[in-house]
Image (tube, rainbow, N blue to C red; front, side, top):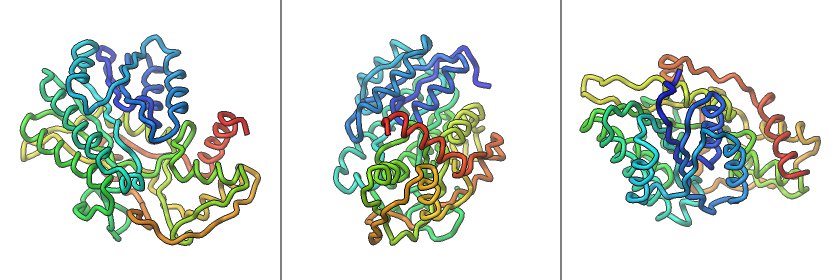
Length: 331
């Protein structure tokens, strides 16, 4: 298990996955330093409330700062570190928003990633950088399930292009400076404390309020919905298994973290309806720019490296998400 002598830095600690990773580590007794810029891409109150949960732990320290601000991040590193293990999840998220505000994506996802790389490479005895990539790097691939050996040079959104850029930058840094890194391609994550811009939340909110539920590509979509607890288990298991240098002297790899089951979107909505006890008023719409029809994770490599095996079906995960949703929003 993760060595106790190190503080672990989590960027994006007020975000959905960052919050859950921090919570699991804190519960296990680790010291966690969290960084987040608390931007208003979605409801800041939700981020504040996640931080309130984390602040119950004396072994948690939070610093509000932007990862793309190099002097500010150097201060964090010097005052609270140095950090030997980093879970880097801070990023400008969302495929659709990247069509409206492209500069936010390059600032956070590319420049921010570079700042983290620089800090890690100047830290003596650095052990492992685990960072968030995305299943969206697979772009227009039609071969399923998505394997980490598939081509990823046809991104269909700027968000995907920035995430692929992170992978390439990390590979170069590992080649040049020989420190271990793992990029994780996450597949549609859902669960308690989830993001309001993600489909499970959007659907649950609309069904609850009796509003029309927007369903794109006329419902002919499939997603590898992955429950948050499985994601966290995977992230922390990977953190414990840094890559060795390969034949090219590179200790960098990318891995898929998904549920290994591609669900029909309409089946997922039916599971939400059951949990809410209400039928959805569905508004079928055409395909959106930047979207993909189907995602499906092949996690063979992840399982081989750290024993990753997702255990939560949507039949188990969706009711847990709805319990939190109804409790948090008092519906």
